[in-house]
Structures are given as structure tokens and as C-alpha cells.
Length: 68
Image (cartoon, rainbow, N blue to C red; front, top):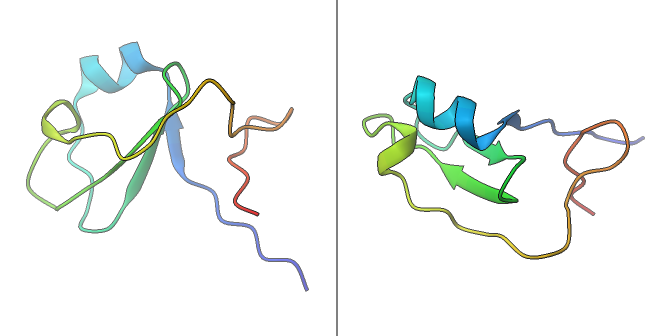
């Protein structure tokens, strides 16, 4: 059985404009900068530090993050 986990995802400009507060442990993926930020339940997106990013995309053709 295959399990698929989908992260909350959006462009950098939408993350920055909306500045949502991610729940404790909730991950958000920045499609523009290839970064993941994990919420603490208190801070908005703009105040969270990214935990990843590289020149390689983590997204497949369906715009889904792949965690293999």
C-alpha cells in the first residue's frame, strides 16, 4: 500500500502576502524557493526559518512534494 503525504504549498509571494500561522508541526512548502518551513502554532510564515532548499526541485509534474 502506498501512502502519500501532501504538504500545504504555495508560491513565495502568496506565502509572504498571506503570512499564515502554521499549526504546531504543520509543514508548508514554498514552490518558488524550494523551501520547507514548519509551524510552531504561534509565528507567521514570514517569521519561520526555512529548513531546506536546493537547486533540485522536490516536486513532480503534478505539483506534489515527493518524499521517497
